[in-house]
Image 1 (cartoon, protein in one colour):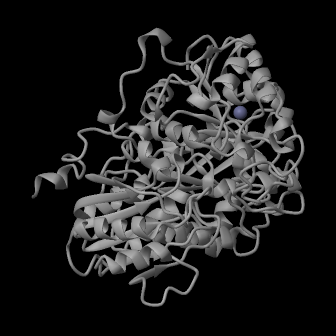
Image 2: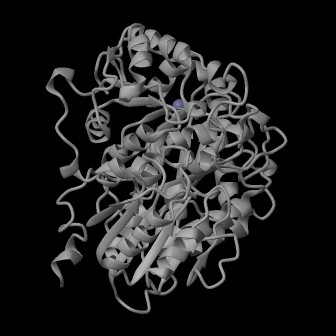
Length: 558
Ligand SMILES: [Zn+2]
């Protein structure tokens, strides 16, 4: 066995942050690099028709197609659990014995489940298991011998999706006529019915596994991710997959993504060059610069190129340059007809999380994450400096109000009120931002936090984030740094791009903000609506509650 088969990134970086270990509750039963070990299912309205406070087995009616859908999951080796709120027990509407009879009837009709997790409490009890609290998801994952990030939960209301996300699991909403429109808007993954949810779970699971290994061994792979830091960070798992199948990995990135590229495990060399068809504020195309880039790419001597893009970007201009540089095997996602520019033209439905979208392209190019690696964001430990000693103990809350795109930034007056509310609740708050955001961070921190504006580069920020109890942040790079460190996120998510694609990946998260605001899906860089309504309405009290849901306590503890 080659040495690097034990640790595929050994020669590139000695250690990586154990993100999943920190986010999860126990050891991972399966070392296989798959997305999911288990599917958790809500009971009423999801598996069976919702009969309020039902204690009568005769009234159990499965939803259409439930048995066949569940059998598909079982056949694929996925473990199944039911996670259900049954406050009727607390209220005395039925007995535990009646509930067990109902569950026996459910299994008679739908087959065996590997675990049943029931919250017997009412909202007034303040327990940590009644959805949207994440307790049932943690308990189910533990009982099934896996971690929440390797679970996907299917439910019919916002409470179900909220519980899944707060535990770092995926959540699929299957709306019924009872589901509120704002719950549908806020969900990152929506399916029309239970069989459709199951089909998409299995499709995504399959999509990150190569159907065939590369036809020839890959000595040097050129991977490409232009654009900003967040884009580069979410491509990390796919780059690790390519690295596991190639002897050498060269990453082409843009200037705005360079600092993030330096943090990625699996990368041996970096070429930094702006691509005018990707940059949001591009300069004119300079023929000499393009000739120089093509020559530089030719020198790499790559025997395979994998070009990663967002769904609204084109890989084709670069594919042409790569062809002119003499690269024979090129893989990319392209809805546009690529002619002879691509050897592997991959296509992905909308709504898939960016890290999985990229992993599926890596799989189409013949690469998968090695066994033992998790499909989570990771950083090179040797690239992250020690945290400044003057910040005190770990467990503080990081609030990052800014964003490169102002449409995704938290309005300063809202951030100021959040800092005040967090301080009042006993949280220590560090306010972070880039050198050009100092005026905002100073103003926001004055409400009761510590101003770190302009004090950190991306690696320094990663160090500070890694020791946080939680990070409060919009849809911007630091959210992905938090995900990479397994640090819970309160996501103030402007809906300009889909939450299901760009939300914090596989890390406990609470989403706040108006998901149905008119900026939804506009991809606007600056807010098209006066007053930035998607985030200006965030109640600071909801941020305090979100931290409680995420089990982040005030006073510095976790
Ligand atoms: Zn409970």
